[in-house]
Length: 203
Image 1: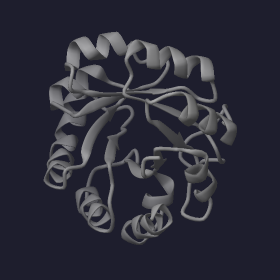
Image 2 (image 1 turned 135 degrees about the horizontal axis):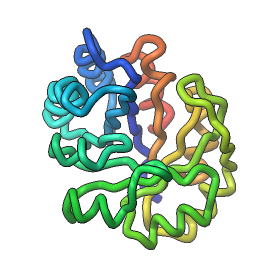
Image 3 (image 1 turned 45 degrees about the vertical axis):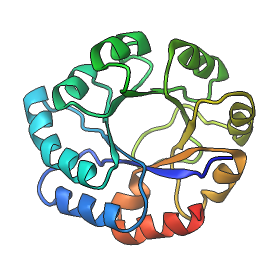
């Protein structure tokens, strides 16, 4: 079984001192990927704010993934894109971003959506929310059995998301999550301490 890794999602506000916070977080423990998730900004502003963050990730060999926007991912030459169910198809993302791009798909609590994503060529699928989240209203609640089933049947990595903290992540790791996607648990306090705490749980 592969080692479960940390997948960091940005807060919605990445202006001001956020690049310094990202530096601190990435220095505090291993992080596999960073998802750039901003809402309500035009592409030009989103690209401007993303630039320094992408450089910080590249310097530490952390995959830089853009949330929702295939166009922005292409513009930034990001390592990949994370698609919600309304954000375009895996096929479209692959055509725009190329063979090497990491393409992930939000599958909520649905095995059916996950299998469809896998068949379409997604590089990973994301299930959630597993716990109540402070950063996003969760209309879907995923079960541990979904992670267990997926990890036993499919080779494609799965990501667990939704209200995950160092205190509640152990069952998800045990159930077979390949990645823990976290945001609020890191950015709502001391990011370095939070990443270090997750690192201890991930072993």
